[in-house]
Image 1 (spheres, rainbow, N blue to C red):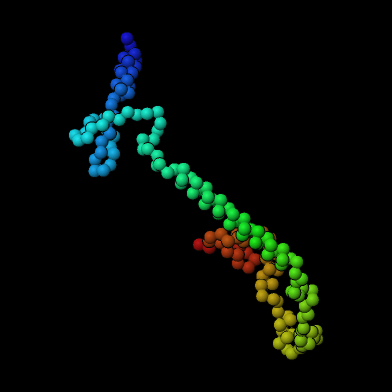
Image 2: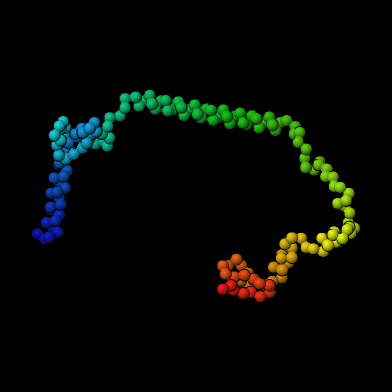
Length: 167
């Protein structure tokens, strides 16, 4: 026999011996423990069944299931009643004539001094010559061509018409 054949035969024997091993169920400190060696006190050989669960189900599972079903049905009924109430409230609100004034019916009163177009005092002429805040900067940006240095890159800044890199 070859080396592989011997290994296969030995592994088959080991698996078969593990499959025939007895499992002992012991109780230690009010906890159930399973072991392959017998316990000193209260030894019970465990016979595994085809089912997975070892613990017996509670006797009142049917009652618990019925209570759960009733609870779910009551919650669904509450939700449906709440939806019906909201729908009815919306219908009533839609049926009533609206007391709100529309935006088109509002009147805006402007004082007469704001309607003057003529030149006012000296400070008004100066204010008319000045640009709105930020307007000059917007015009300058539009006049400048795109440059890689015009963005918010670390270490770069635009200085007037020339671009320079900070050290």
